[in-house]
Length: 351
Ligand code: ACO
Image (cartoon, rainbow, N blue to C red; front, side, top):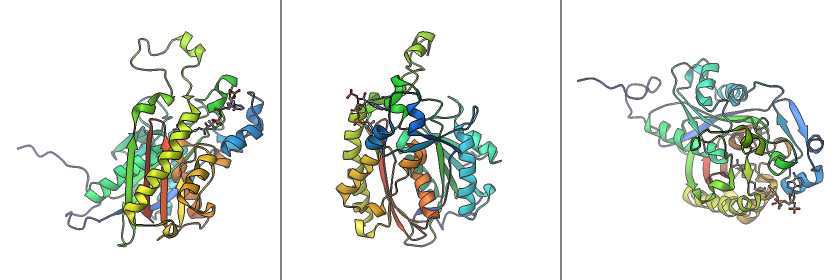
């Protein structure tokens, strides 16, 4: 009978008897391009103002790629290297990659294989996750299951976006264009070694009722041809958002899922060291913090510097906070995200 090879267990030892009860994040890294774009810079391209953007979203500036031909995988590379080093590993120790992005380098193949290639990880599996702002938490759930099941030992999660080439920097696109920035965040998920460590609760949700509230409509495979010159002139290849509706859902669902995972992890707000929310809008995160009674000093905000970097926001925020000493091994971290789809999720993790 033909033996069908199972998933790689090369780093796991011969037997699965020592499977960990939990997985945890053992390292994080981040990278943002050097080009700073302020609200005043955008006001030269469209009818907007620093005051409007800051008041509505909390954003002061964001980063854009410095020049043409820099993709999400390129931004993820330095973030991945930083995370691997932070975890005390070498690239060769990574046995699976999960890449979360809504702005992949190409329509296909996914950015995961490109990152694997850049890291020299040829032959290592790479999965792309398309869950927008919740992409990191969806990826974390997959990595957690892989590690706990003994399928893979060290999983690299990359969240990276190049938004600047996909937004309309003109009056027509101003409602969306002012919100987004480029950047990357990575995390290494591996087995927890301490009994108190690990992902203690993780919940994911989706509701396609909101699919059309935030989307890029074209090119689309359900139309022949997928895009035309006329459609390009209409700007249908840029993201469209019903901002108020997304806002309403976000301020309801983020606290709901955050409370759900805290209850499941049997942790109270007092037990939390840090809340790392997705960064879509400072007002959303302040409202979520207020609903849950989380003091502002425990909440990670970096939207003022980077705007919304979608799948990158949570690992980027975690990586910065870790380096600033706002969390350390043993810290209890709450994460929550809401975004296009709609998709949302939450997690409680002890580092
Ligand atoms: N500059 C100046 N004026 C603007 C701009 C701009 N950049 N954009 C829109 N306006 C105008 C509008 O035209 C409107 O004018 P009108 O009243 O004359 O019609 C006015 O400002 C108010 O616009 P609103 O859309 O009502 O502004 P709102 O207070 O709702 O704030 C915002 C908009 C910031 C987008 C908010 O709705 C929001 O944060 N929504 C949620 C975003 C989010 O969470 N997205 C999900 C994550 S992203 C992802 O998953 C990919």
